[in-house]
Length: 140
Image (cartoon, rainbow, N blue to C red; front, side):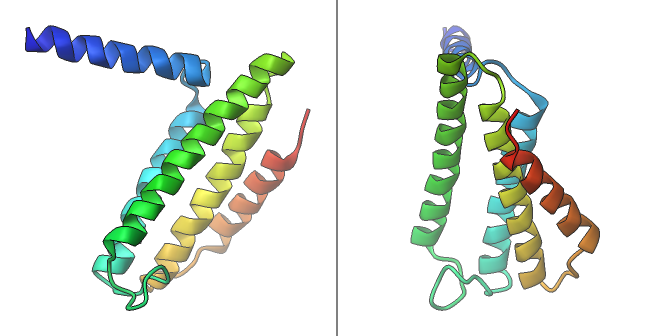
């Protein structure tokens, strides 16, 4: 009985995801993975290195983490809204451009967190982020 309930819930979530995002795309995978990496890196910066600019002491703060998590969910909501706008306008590039913008934002945040950890910033990665930013701002 529990197995059927779990499968039903997972099926409903997958179906809602398809409706919200129009299917699973590689760019959607990339942005979600980068969101998770950024969240984990931010936690490490605060909990281990105590260098977080988000709290007064630089240490981990539950409210700052909660706000960060809420921002990630907000980004997912914006991506879903962008897909709905694509549907309304009969186009297929608004969600993609939105995702590219968020990919650039998340990648930049990861690089910033790496800098706070004392890891050397990569110019190659920063240049790639600039390419993503320009790709996200173009409309077809």
